[in-house]
Amino acid sequence: MKEKNLLAELAAYLFSKSDKETGRTPSERELAEHFAVSRGQIREALAILEAMRIVERRAKSGIYVDTKQASVEALALFARAGL
Image 1 (cartoon, rainbow, N blue to C red):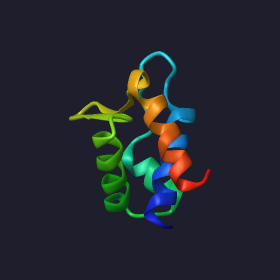
Image 2 (cartoon, rainbow, N blue to C red):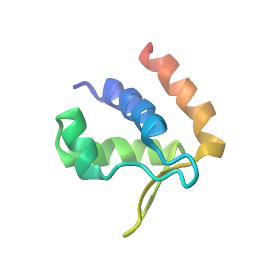
Image 3 (cartoon, rainbow, N blue to C red):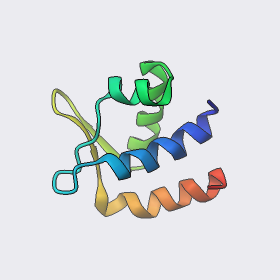
Image 4 (cartoon, helix red, strand yellow):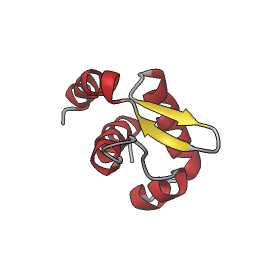
């Protein structure tokens, strides 16, 4: 899967699967299984999404969607990916 497509698809998936109250998302392992890619690829994509402030990774807690910033950044990402 191309990196740009993985980023856009991952962002969309995280929005759809995040807990509506806490923003918590599936684990790296679950994401890697869902997208049929390595955990390393998921980590790289998450690092980019975190730099864009779409997600926040918390040690020993999980991955969370930052709903305040995420919608604007995600729309820009989707537009660049042609989705």
